[in-house]
Length: 141
Image (cartoon, rainbow, N blue to C red; front, side, top):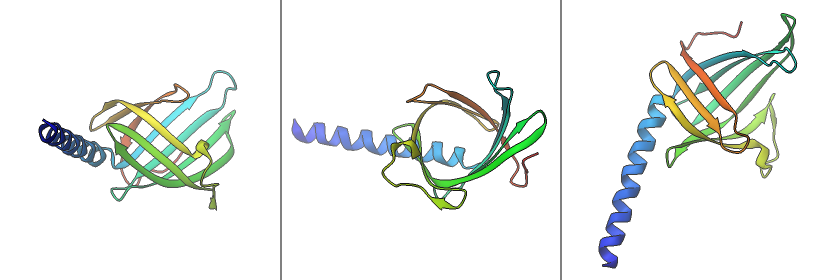
C-alpha cells in the first residue's frame, strides 16, 4: 500500500511540474499595465519582462497630473510552483535588497492566462492585477 501511495504522489508531482512548466512557458514575455489610483490621482505604468530563464525586470513610472514624478526598476526571479506565480525581488534601482525581508517575496493566484491577458491576485494583500502582453520592443510611455 505504501508503494502505491508513493507512486501516486510521484505521479501527482510530475503532473504538477509539467503543468507549472507549461504555465511558465506561456507567462514568459513582455507585459504592460497602466492604471490610475482614485485615492491619489496618480497614474502608474508598469512594463515587466519575464524571461524564460526565470529572471524578471520590472520598469515602472508614476505620473501626477500627466507629469512623471518618479521611475524605478526592479529585478529578480520568478517561477511557477503548484500553479502559483511567485516572485523574489533582488534589486531595486540597481541596489540589492535585504535577502530575508519577506516584503520582497510575493505569491499570486493565477486567475486568467491566455495569449493576450494575464490576471493574477496577490495572496497576502488581495490585490488583483490585469496585464496585457506587448511586443518585446514596447516602451513605457
